[in-house]
Length: 172
Image (cartoon, rainbow, N blue to C red; front, side, top):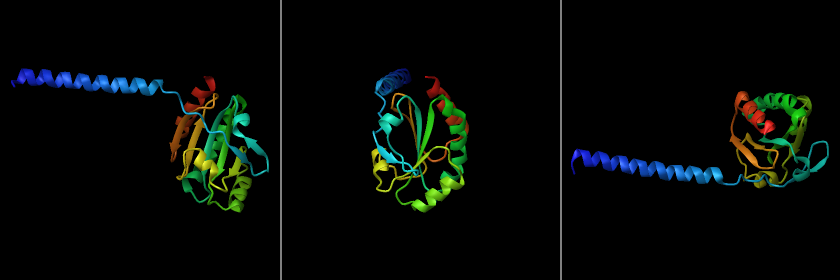
């Protein structure tokens, strides 16, 4: 095979690869977003809630965390700030303490930090399983106004990225 034919063959193969990748991307973009699971939970104050009713029409940030997780503790002031900035526009936060977190630690943390949003303890691990078997903290799931999972993040998230996402979802 001469150099000209080899070059032409590589261009055709590359084009076919790009077309296949583009078709895959198109299918991915058309895929229906995953619905957030319908869950029941009890806040530290004893209020029992159903996500289907409580989250209707809101942008929700569900944060799986633990008092023993340094990144989680470091991230809490950012969540408090986001709640303060966006709550009036239909945004809320639910902080779900992991099953292994001692309830007294969670309660003391929430009280001492004056967390302005709902805090629940996942005593049986049911909430973690419902949200895709969450095992790593922090895991943050952002749910849009239609009840679809807009973003799932494991680890830290920069405040500017979170704020940009919330702005986009709240104006949609």
